[in-house]
Amino acid sequence: MRRIAFIIAAIIACSLSAQADSVSPERFVRDHKSGDVISAAETAISRAAQNRKDIWVLPLAEINPIRVYADRVNIVVVMKDEGKKEAGIYVTRTISSYLPTSDDEWKFTHVKNGIYLYERQKKA
Image 1 (tube, rainbow, N blue to C red):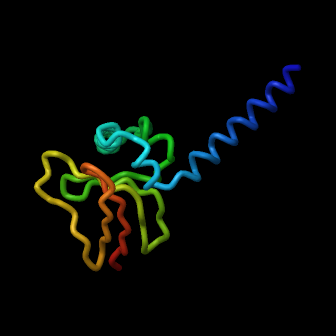
Image 2 (image 1 turned 180 degrees about the vertical axis):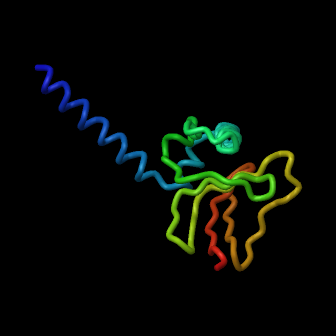
């Protein structure tokens, strides 16, 4: 009986993991409150600056980001990195006077208050 319960738990865990991996960044942002995503991104960048291993908090932890870094005072949450191209979620902070603007390197799509999806062509 324990073995069956263990197998069922493993199947459920794999299913939940696959669901999290299959959620697009756009759907993720649309399904969560702006304040929750912004707060999680601010916590992640703060913890990364402290070299902590437990960077991710909910709701961002649900989608397994690759890394986080600052762009000026704004926050970049990398969801996909293919060498010279990366994509993910870009969070503008209320203290920032810099609003993201698309150019040759960055492409932004506004989703909702303070949150954008981005694609970046990294320079050599």
